Length: 275
Length: 285
Image 1: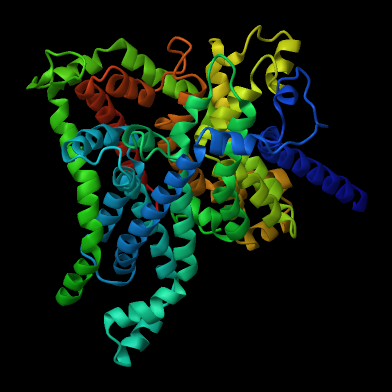
Image 2 (image 1 turned 180 degrees about the vertical axis):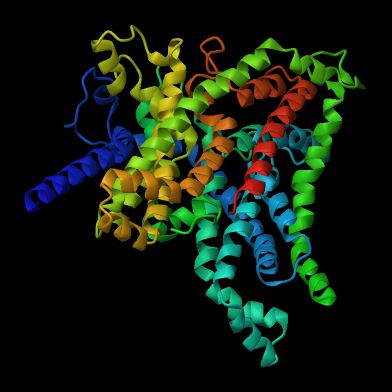
C-alpha cells in the first residue's frame, strides 16, 4: 500500500513538471530570443548555449522608437485604470450595500459591455471620434478601454464589498457617520485589496488590448500591441527585437501574477469564482 | 427605503452615464449605420438610407457564413481540449499541498501575455527554417513549408489558444475542487466507492456550475478572437482562418465599407448577447 502511494506521488510530480515546462517553456524561450543575436536566432538548430547580448533592447526601443509606443501604452493604461476606478468603485459599493432597484438588470447591463465583441463598438466609435475630432488621441483609446475596465471594476470590487459584513456599516451609521464617511473610512480601506487587484487587472487588460488600439490610436497614440504586426515582414523579421519588445510588454502581467496570485481566479472570472 | 434607493442612484449615476456614452451611443450609431450605405471607397455610398439591405446582404453572404463556420472550426476543438485538459490539470494540482500556489502562478503566465504576443511567438516557433516546432514538423515531413502558410493554419491557431487559455480552466477547476465539502467523499469511501466512482458521481457533478462558467467565459472570448489570428495569418491563407471578427474588420477598415462592416459586427454582437443572457438567466452566478 505504501509502495503504491510512493509511485503515485512520483507520477504526480512528473506530470506537474511536464505541465510547468509546457506553460513556462515557450515564454522563457521567447525571452531568451531577446538576448540572442541574429546568427543565433536564425540557426537551423536551437542553440541553448549562446553569447547573450543586450543589443536588441536599445535597437528596438531607441533606434526604432518603440519607446514612444511604450510611453503611450503606459499613459493609456493608467488613464483607463483611473477612470474605471473613479466611476466603478461607487457603483460597486451601491450595488453591494444599497437597495438598488433592478440590481440584476443593472449588473447584466454592465456585464454586457464586457461581453460585446470589440469590433461591434469599434466601428461606431471610429465614426463618432472622427466627427468630434479625437481620433488618434489618447482619450479615444482610453474611452474605448473604459468600457471593459469599468465593468471589471464594478463586478470584481462588488464581490469584495459583499464580503464585508453589513454590521460594520450599521455600527458606523449608528455612531453618527454619514453614508459617505462610512464609505470613505470603513468600507474603502477594507476593500482595498480588491481595489488594487482590479486596478492591476484593468491595467493588464488595457496594456494588452489590440483591436481598439489598432483602430482608434492612429499614429500619435499608438500603444505597443498594434505596433507588433508591423515588425513581422515577409523579408527578414528582426526576431530579437520583436522578442525584446514582447518581453517588456509581458512584465505587468507577470508581476500581477507573482504578487497577487491569491486573487487570480477571482479577477479572471469577474468575481464569479472565489479562489 | 424609497429615499435610500434614490441615494443609491446618485452613487450609480457616473457609471451609468459613462456606460451610456461608451456603450449605448456607439451601439445606437451602429444600428443607425447598419440601415445606411456608408463607404469611404465606393463614392456612390455616402450614407443614404437602404433599409434592411445590409442585413439581407449579410445573411446571403456565403463568405460571412463561411467565417461563422471557421470561427466554430477553431472554437470547438480549442474549448473542448481546454476544458478537458484544464480539468485534468486542476485535479493534478489539487494533489499538491505546499507547491500548489507556486504551480498555479507558473501555469497562469500564458494568460497574462497579450494575445498578439502569443501570436507572434507562434509565428516564430512555427517558422520552418529556424522555429523549433517548425523544424521538427519539417524533419518529420509533416508539412513542407511553415504551417501558417498552409490550409492547416487553423490547427496552429487552435494550439495557440489552448496554450494561452487552458490555465484559465485549470485554475477555476482547482478552486472548485478545493472548495468541495469533504464529508461526501469520506462517506463514499467508507461505503466502498472506488476513486473512479467518487470522481464520476461526486467530483464531476459538483463541478457542473464551474463547467458552465469556464465554457461561458471562453466562448465569449473565443467567439470574437482577433489578435492572434491577425498577427499570425491575417485570416489566411485564402480564407482558412478568417473568423467573424476578422471578416467584419476587413469590411470596415480594409475595404472601408463601414456600413456593411457594422452590420456584420452587430450580428456578431447578437450572438454573444444571447449567450450572455442565457448564461446569466440559467446560472446561479
